[in-house]
Image (tube, rainbow over all chains, first blue to last red; front, side, top):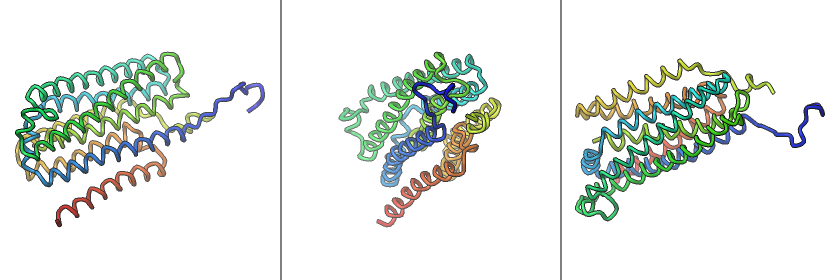
Length: 206
Length: 96
């Protein structure tokens, strides 16, 4: 680098390293949820009928609707990355805004779904839950833990996506420097993948 | 810096839309099969279609198809370790 182009505080960007770091974080996330999946399958093997009955009382429609919402939000964030690389700032902002809207809609559905369960008396120490057989208690415990932890990830995603949207608006993320957007995209896709597994485990396997 | 070279190629919008349509189709198949109440069919369908859907997201949406073999290998290793642990747990559970 010549002295004429050197900055007072040169910014070193390691694109491959930044992306690799994100993947390493995602590996820890896979193993975090993997532990819960393991717990689920072990208990399902022990209480197959109770898990079957528990799943039948969940709102399958909301589960499927939320799947479609998350898959679509994954599409919009993927398109946003291609768009910023092509220098299309407007489409990038539109797609990111769409992703955030879908994520919020997902949480609204989750709120409706959980409220329904709680009204039925299905919550820790809830009257209806205490009357259920042991296997179903475990099923609902795992249901709340897994969808709750996933919901927290959606919430974190909304915050990260909003900050990213602001970066694009202020041109801190551009067609040549888009790593932040790409990493947020990777995170968001993983949140989608986890839901892809939660749908059959909780809602469809009844 | 040679940005374009270092960052790999830009995936066309069309590819993403196709993958998204395929994911929606696979979800529809999954829901259909699991609501027809045929357990002999629905369990294998759940076990194959779900990883297939996740694979599509990994390979296309997460750009893994276009990444270096090093990263691909690592991803497969992590997923392999998880599968191995689930498998070993079931070996233990089924012989108790």
